Length: 516
View 1 (tube, rainbow, N blue to C red):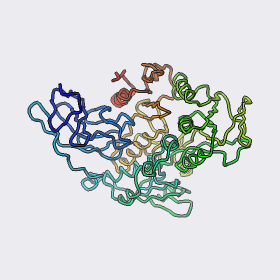
View 2 (cartoon, rainbow, N blue to C red; view 1 turned 60 degrees about the vertical axis):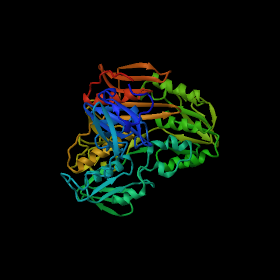
View 3 (cartoon, rainbow, N blue to C red; view 1 turned 180 degrees about the vertical axis):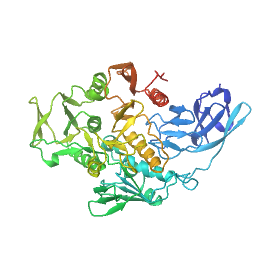
View 4 (cartoon, rainbow, N blue to C red; view 1 turned 90 degrees about the vertical axis):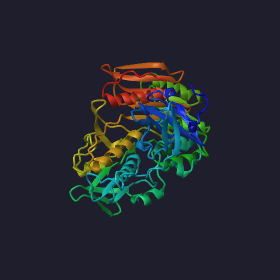
């Protein structure tokens, strides 16, 4: 066998030491490189994911794809191109050469153009213009894919937000914990929009959609005609009244502006009460506790995440938070706030400098309803993410689509799902007729524990835990009628990727996957 130290691929690597479907990380000069094998083909690609720079060597090869262990981005081993979100940029490639029983990694190959199809392929359909309503994950991913697929017409992103599309998951995570430069939050720098001729209209509320005249009218009177329209308006936070509370006492967690306001408020605060034990609520609780605040969580549930992950997993996260000093008031509600004191429904009084309200969101479908589109707990779309009106698509938190993996029409509020739907919607705007079949995926990070979740289980009749929650190494399978519809993992990144791949290969059938 080769030395266990990091191999220098310029010296070659024994073919028989790399099994089919396997990979190994080594070096070429001062760069980390992965050598991968698929049957009798060998590939050399960059070792870091272009999303969060996770080590791809700890990921999974599926066919000629390399999948990231952190947030399940997917790259082509042949071209290096990012095939699906959350990564958008390609990884570098090197030429490989087989000499006898050794494979050598040679010179680095020239980087492919950002949009390699732009000047080589003409899309099957090319609308006169594309307007995207919504400047979040789905909207940016769609605009990016339109240019990647060679669309040269006008693209406009209309966003009510005051910032260009940004990494929303960090609004409740890293951004609240420490100062982070704006460049780290932006999904693309402003130069990208100029270079790709994408008109980015920020601080722009939409007043109405005219599907007959095919135009969007803004609240300030501006109008945008469209040949095709993508609705990606996301979700709105649910706001609840707190008797006695001043407006300056209440904070929500949805936008980057929200996060900036919370970060500033924390600088002069000592105690905070989080209302709601949602993923957002507890991510914020963990972030603020890490900054030394006393954190209380008030929620009507018996356990956090009980409806999403079950009582046992919810109990694990409760104990995790309590071990870091978070104080729970579960099965209760917050009744009022007087100055810096809140009253809980059992009579308990808690000091609080301000409140974080994380009681959920609802899909932003008002525009669609007023325009006459079919709406049912979200905007109803077909497998191509097209709404009840031809040429009008929807993606992200608002889209309710026929999911082949659960056999149901579902709507989910997951970041990666929104990005992937934006990409598929863009392809279908251009006439590629690609059904959306991605397996839903999300993650949450709380203190030093990351949970990955693939599939979708609104209800289940059995929960099976392989491994140990307490040891932070487990896979939790959610079953209905004997079929596994979702798997949550902690500390088993490979198994999460295996489960995702198995769901893709066999909808509604998920074989038990081994963990590495």
